Image 1 (cartoon, one colour):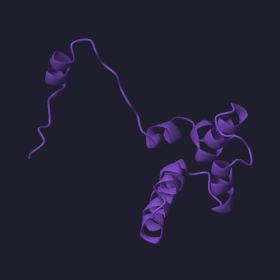
Image 2: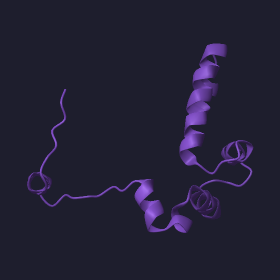
Image 3: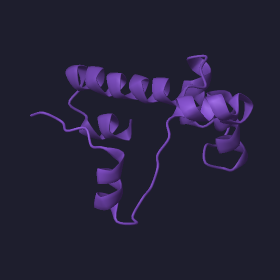
Image 4: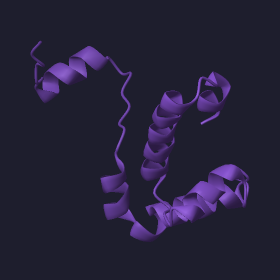
Length: 96
């Protein structure tokens, strides 16, 4: 299946005023590295109660010496895959 690359005018016609722009972390970092670094985002998540300090998820960040959310997600996904090999406890795998 081939993806078609649209011209800008075509995109404007097709979106018909329902336009949203999603920018990735690279753009955010270029805009304001201090505000959008993973370290700042993790601290903001803690400060706003999204991640509780010393909770299991916070310990995963700390024990892996990272603030990188993408890295932690990958760790959890890989751990779940490995656990499925060693255990039949689906509940444990789903918790990750």
